[in-house]
Image 1: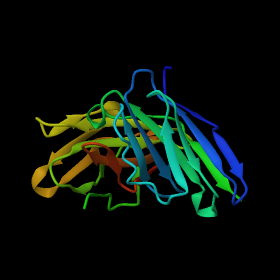
Image 2 (image 1 turned 30 degrees about the horizontal axis):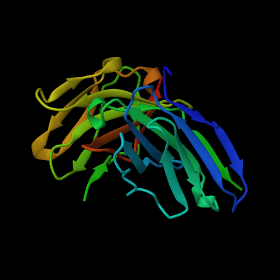
Image 3 (image 1 turned 90 degrees about the vertical axis):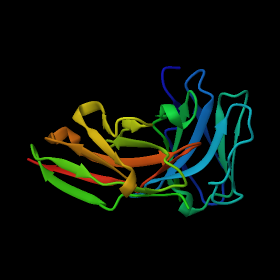
Image 4 (image 1 turned 135 degrees about the vertical axis):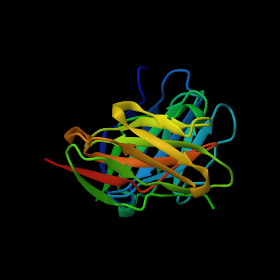
Length: 114
Length: 110
């Protein structure tokens, strides 16, 4: 596609439920990143996929968070047993070849845990 | 440890005045350096980036930034601010992945 597409744009869920957030990167982009932006905060790195390499999961805040990237394209970020502190905007970005070329960001998914 | 610091949480300038947003970083080697802007309700847009070479880089919307290795800084500047520049500005650094500062919110007074 022309840009990075994220769905849903908004998600309200009850505490304790699982949620899945989807990211569809720009076609041909080998690198895909997930970030979390809490209210009034900067972007917190979560996970990074580069081609067929093992993902860098060093930013995932707990084992309730996981992500996968199927076929080197679409990625899903899953949060299990959601907590209120998980409420944030989850941003996905893709790049043609890693950091050097900068990222193209999606519009994000605003997650609210009630 | 890698870190990106934007010392100013919020800056207010008058329209037409000059602007400088500060960014300092701590990294093992000179990383790639970026500035992004996030307007209300909008996604992040890349303003400019530095890889190597000329330490003064030009970006979109009339912005520029200067890399100073001795100060580990990459400050963003604009000679004359427009009301439409009101937004959140993020400095980012990285090599394999990008780490962001906490952001500086810019308010522009008429």
